[in-house]
Length: 181
Image (cartoon, rainbow, N blue to C red; front, side, top):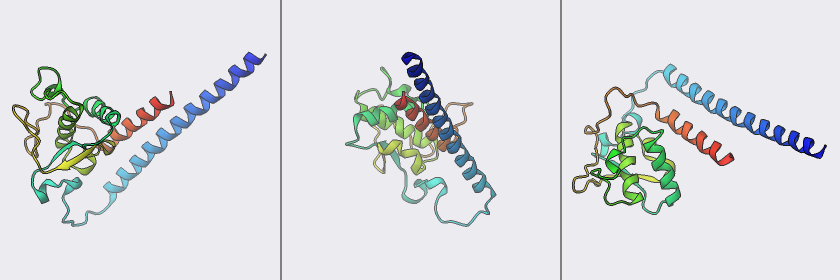
């Protein structure tokens, strides 16, 4: 009898946790949809700020690189996201790629972060990566490794970059699910 009661409690806990995760997903997606709906329904207001926080219009060309001193674990999670769900082309930082050397986490993350940043409008949110990235005015290119800058980013033909906000929310939800398991 104790085994059956213990099994029933486990099942109730699992169901409760699953429902909480689903409710979180629903609430986040509802908030995003509400924000998008509100933005589309507002009257445009003349602003001197560049679209989506793009600083290249105001201060010249910018790049996004890994923040020195960021924790390795956080950098690795952000790099995995950029090259996975972020749909960044990370082939140049793979072995025999033009940017593989130096073979360091900081270098590889910097390349991937910048590629994502350039392909997603140079917006501040596209250079966050959980606080592991920073915008710089110094060109991080070296040797045969050329970091894209505004106007030179090459995205794969036929691919449309999904909404940055939705991808970051999806990434956050996946991390939450992973940590709960």
